[in-house]
Amino acid sequence: MFVWVFHRISGLLLIVLLVIKFLTSFFLMTKAQKPDWALLLHTNPLTDTLLIISGVYHAFYGLRTIIIDLGLRKEKLLFWIFTVLATFVTTALLILYFTRNY
View 1 (cartoon, one colour):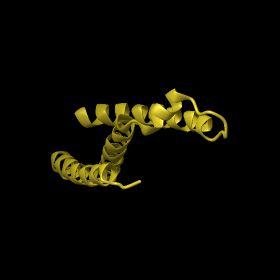
View 2 (tube, one colour):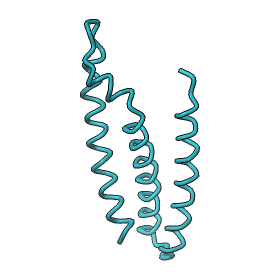
View 3 (tube, rainbow, N blue to C red):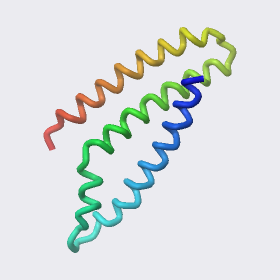
View 4 (tube, rainbow, N blue to C red):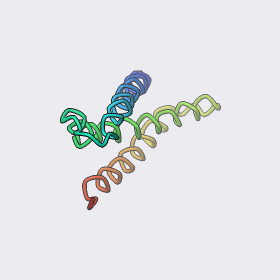
């Protein structure tokens, strides 16, 4: 039950964050003075961290759901496998994100 609820909430969070990032990016494409609030949204590491975490876990739990729909009924084992894999991938992506040089 937890995975189903998390999958739905992370999907909604992804939609909201991506729409906000996409719409505010239009303000950053102008040659004129860029608004401070748009710059703050695109340079804030919290929003990018939330996008990485919710995106990776949403993807891995979606793959888990597909495998269960295909007929494999070991739900607890799949939960732990995909949680560990998502944690490793999330950690690697966050390390890459915070150690970039640009």
